[in-house]
Length: 442
Image 1 (cartoon, rainbow, N blue to C red):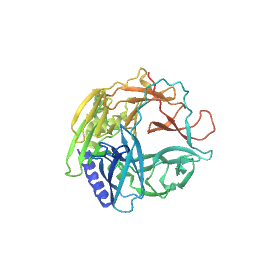
Image 2: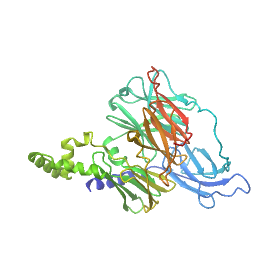
Image 3: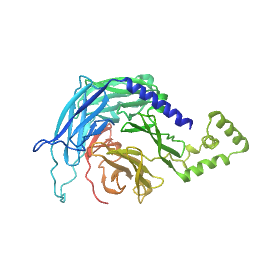
Image 4: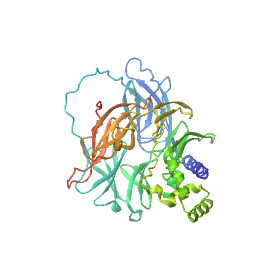
């Protein structure tokens, strides 16, 4: 309970900070190209590289409030129309735009006889390796280093492989670990001693230092937002149970959505207390009283159980797809659906997390925010392969084998897999690649 109260308090602080920011209202209408330019209903309107989104009404009108930015890329998508990206440069607190969308051509299914295309090399240099990456509009934010990440640099690259900007991370930040996109859509670089929010202005980086302790407590628990609600969890990697909650920004109402538990692991976890010697049990009880937590949690930490081969942190991701919250519970082997109000819609059995060779399942799922699709990641003898998982049924809809061995940091966007790769037994540095996903049957 103390952890939950702490998270709620930090969410309130975030809300105050967000309200203090200048907002911009983007509004307009989506029209079909042919005929009388009628409005298109249920078009998804999303700010690229963020979780800010809305849908058009029956007349095609939409309205979206976002934090003010000098440049915004809006993605318009619909199952019956071709995707459109609209580039906007707000100069005030409101902006009007009209978007025209073309109907998709219907192709008859056929048999492909062409060879697999070679992966595209997007960015790379013999002077440095790419250790992580993320998308910024039509460009890439890269975490790079010549030798190791205690002297890391951030680079902004375009699709012609040109480096537009580069900045060294402060020496006192320590070793750079990763790039992390938070629920507000900001890309942050996580370092050993510091966290920096990356803002891009006129193709140049401006880094804002964030307090790591506050960030890990205030921001990371929040998974996403949906219709004025913050979706967050009380996940802790050293405990085999956690909850997903929704929190309304309008009326401060909190609602528990679902509890995720690895029942067998929790039983073994709790048994650690009873395996302690009498003096150790007394010490565990004293520490539990001081920390206001359960003695069994203290005992599991004291015994080193959470660092042993018998313990594995939980993995049950939540994705929001078209106003539906999808929770993949890999411990009940169930996919749960919730509506935007947090009401349970239904559930279905899943089995993709139990491949024939259990070691192949890497407990990683990746969402394509443009196509609104979800993939599970596997590894067979060092070769990654992807399975498209139907977010409605939980069924496998086909697989795709990445061509390069040991592909790393896989992200999926607009039907392409992006990843970092260095040729095996090669002196080449780590480059950024992409390849078109062409599904095959098992």
